[in-house]
Amino acid sequence: MVERRVTVGWAEGLHARPASIFVRAASAAGVPVTIQKGDGSPVNAASMLGVLGLGAEGGEEIVLASEAEDAGPALDRLAKLVSEGLEELPETV
Image (cartoon, rainbow, N blue to C red; front, side, top):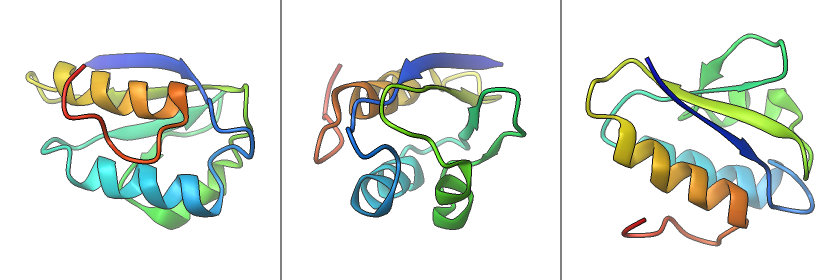
Protein backbone atom coordinates (compact mmCIF):
# COMPACT_ATOMS: atom_id res chain seq x y z
CA MET A 1 0.00 0.00 0.00
CA VAL A 2 1.19 3.48 -0.91
CA GLU A 3 0.13 6.37 1.31
CA ARG A 4 0.68 10.05 1.86
CA ARG A 5 -0.01 11.95 5.10
CA VAL A 6 -0.98 15.54 4.43
CA THR A 7 -2.35 18.54 6.30
CA VAL A 8 -5.50 20.09 4.81
CA GLY A 9 -4.52 23.49 3.41
CA TRP A 10 -7.99 24.88 2.70
CA ALA A 11 -9.00 27.12 5.62
CA GLU A 12 -12.58 25.82 5.39
CA GLY A 13 -11.38 22.21 5.24
CA LEU A 14 -12.76 19.60 2.86
CA HIS A 15 -16.21 21.13 2.62
CA ALA A 16 -18.34 22.21 -0.36
CA ARG A 17 -16.10 23.65 -3.08
CA PRO A 18 -12.76 22.19 -1.87
CA ALA A 19 -14.37 18.76 -1.48
CA SER A 20 -15.77 19.02 -5.01
CA ILE A 21 -12.33 19.92 -6.40
CA PHE A 22 -10.71 17.06 -4.47
CA VAL A 23 -13.31 14.47 -5.51
CA ARG A 24 -12.98 15.42 -9.19
CA ALA A 25 -9.20 15.13 -8.91
CA ALA A 26 -9.43 11.77 -7.12
CA SER A 27 -11.83 10.48 -9.76
CA ALA A 28 -9.36 11.46 -12.49
CA ALA A 29 -6.34 9.99 -10.67
CA GLY A 30 -6.44 6.74 -12.66
CA VAL A 31 -6.04 4.59 -9.53
CA PRO A 32 -8.40 3.84 -6.65
CA VAL A 33 -7.66 6.16 -3.72
CA THR A 34 -8.99 6.23 -0.17
CA ILE A 35 -8.94 9.12 2.29
CA GLN A 36 -8.95 8.79 6.07
CA LYS A 37 -9.01 11.23 8.98
CA GLY A 38 -7.55 10.21 12.32
CA ASP A 39 -8.58 6.79 13.53
CA GLY A 40 -11.69 6.80 11.33
CA SER A 41 -12.37 4.35 8.56
CA PRO A 42 -10.98 5.12 5.12
CA VAL A 43 -13.52 6.17 2.49
CA ASN A 44 -13.44 6.26 -1.29
CA ALA A 45 -11.76 9.55 -2.25
CA ALA A 46 -13.94 9.74 -5.37
CA SER A 47 -17.14 9.80 -3.26
CA MET A 48 -18.46 13.28 -2.47
CA LEU A 49 -20.59 11.97 0.39
CA GLY A 50 -17.66 10.00 1.79
CA VAL A 51 -15.30 12.98 1.69
CA LEU A 52 -17.86 15.37 3.19
CA GLY A 53 -18.64 12.78 5.88
CA LEU A 54 -15.04 12.91 7.11
CA GLY A 55 -15.53 16.46 8.36
CA ALA A 56 -11.85 17.25 7.71
CA GLU A 57 -11.09 20.79 8.86
CA GLY A 58 -8.28 23.09 7.75
CA GLY A 59 -5.04 22.18 9.50
CA GLU A 60 -6.07 18.58 10.22
CA GLU A 61 -4.03 15.64 8.96
CA ILE A 62 -5.52 13.16 6.52
CA VAL A 63 -4.11 10.02 4.93
CA LEU A 64 -4.41 9.36 1.21
CA ALA A 65 -3.79 5.72 0.26
CA SER A 66 -3.96 3.30 -2.64
CA GLU A 67 -3.16 -0.35 -3.14
CA ALA A 68 -2.22 0.22 -6.80
CA GLU A 69 1.51 -0.30 -7.38
CA ASP A 70 1.82 2.78 -9.59
CA ALA A 71 -0.16 5.11 -7.31
CA GLY A 72 2.78 7.22 -6.09
CA PRO A 73 2.56 10.03 -8.68
CA ALA A 74 -1.23 10.26 -8.38
CA LEU A 75 -1.03 10.44 -4.58
CA ASP A 76 1.70 13.09 -4.84
CA ARG A 77 -0.56 15.27 -7.03
CA LEU A 78 -3.55 14.80 -4.71
CA ALA A 79 -1.39 15.53 -1.64
CA LYS A 80 -0.14 18.75 -3.26
CA LEU A 81 -3.71 19.77 -4.09
CA VAL A 82 -4.84 19.24 -0.49
CA SER A 83 -1.81 20.65 1.32
CA GLU A 84 -1.63 23.83 -0.76
CA GLY A 85 -5.40 24.33 -0.98
CA LEU A 86 -5.21 24.59 -4.77
CA GLU A 87 -8.20 25.33 -6.99
CA GLU A 88 -7.30 22.60 -9.50
CA LEU A 89 -5.13 19.50 -9.73
CA PRO A 90 -1.51 20.28 -10.57
CA GLU A 91 -0.28 18.69 -13.81
CA THR A 92 3.09 17.83 -12.35
CA VAL A 93 4.61 17.60 -8.92
